[in-house]
Length: 484
Image: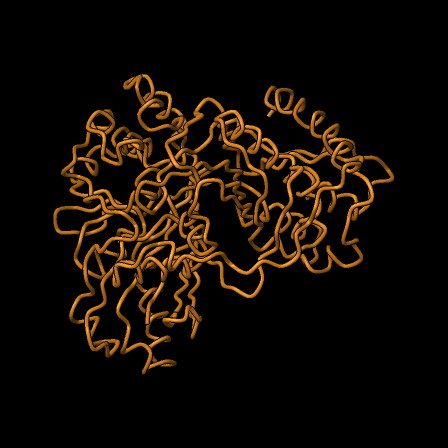
């Protein structure tokens, strides 16, 4: 038996998976985000730990026999969070999250201090990454900064509580701006640029490798016959890739969650920092990936429903399953800034082309198309790094809408495969990594492709019509930036 723990922004989810890769049970606990100031986003790590204990307690109560036989445990987590500990492993302040934008000035400062940043890390400095946040803490909370003994990412903090080990996997570490991504090792120059050293960092492991064992008191708590091996694990998107079987060069998927991701697995390190492409290590040895990331995707649809005083289900009622033509209204989905390709934490969204004839259905279509256009920007940025994507899977809460899936296929001009009959969450991917760490099996023998349903083929007529609208969309960002 194997456990996967996914520490997300809105919840902790745990799954129990048997040797045939069937999900026997799952449990989740909600988390809250605190926003103490504009652009700030924080969470209390103690909340992560309590939620994890409660979810695992529920699994143990519901499946005592299977829980007793757990041999491997994997971790997936929200990336980029700065969890700061003192010498006694006490948390010094709330964790600064991935979607926190306070460190924009520190990004410019870090690039000026270390001109090799983009070449070594493969990424442009962004406020969401971990390293600029430490510069912010050093500048605004200097007494606290001087007490820092360890800097951990969110899931590494859970590992510490579960096992007593300081360890981090390559995929999550690549999102800190402290990793030499090609060498898969900490960069001393990057750490020095933020006033830190290797002593402040956890040791590095591959995501499928052992990285500790469960503490004896927790083994007893859940009545396990042996202390499970804890795998290195993965950042949330890398864990999702493992759950999909996206482990070979050329594998690609679109994730339509709170944020949006276009992922492409690569055989080597292939950066394009000028277009804000994320070039990271995969969680499996000698594998890398690229991501185009948009900060608001399905969350745009949730925002629209809330603003109109209705539910997402009611917004979708009466919408067709396939678009007839592109809409007349354009939506720029920059509700919390943007990463790829603009790296602009301050830009905000807009509707363009509203008229007396604009109704609720037109706004729904505009939001879907705007997110699709932002993903097209990501695809173009990946192409600029030499990556060719010929087809992709589509996952995430937004992908449940057939209309949205079809719009994205036409805009990207890519066949998009629906995923059916499998749990493709980060928790399931984490459980697979826990199995690999416990058994030593080859990744290809465990990380099978998820079952696929219908593949949506792009329509040539709609593709061309959407290409014209995308060009209009691309012309709007510079003008919006002038007034935002």
